[in-house]
Image 1 (tube, one colour):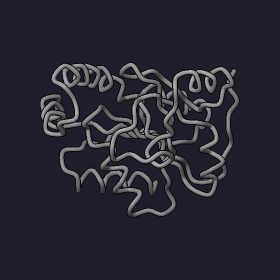
Image 2 (tube, one colour):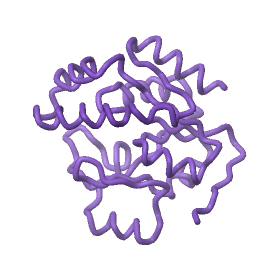
Image 3 (tube, helix red, strand yellow):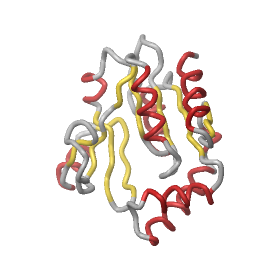
Length: 187
């Protein structure tokens, strides 16, 4: 049975979205305008991209180290996604103890964090349509056509779980979606 972690501050945020829905952009907008929030840094086994910084974007790890963290229960949540492992170290709660924490995770991560932090608010960012999402992924030009097809299929699956979240934000207009996020965090 997992242990519930108590907090006396305003609730933390758990934010999920399909790849290409604009989650990272919305999180950055929130972080720019609200100094009470900080982003929990996740650990991953995927290769570091050229513009990413260790300890800021991710903690980059090899598979044996990641698996050791799992065995020692050092994660709030973890999952294997797109052939790589991702997880939020429990140490992020201590590192960010003076802030409201934003957790950028998938549906499985949200469920795991909610077990440990039941007061956390969960927000699902949804695109206007799967066609719009696919076009965003193509325009982003980070993935092959095969990976984009896989991401769109996973997005369709993820969107079927959005009703498990406390809030849903439609990202069809960045300004409107940002305002909606700000309204939620004030609740």
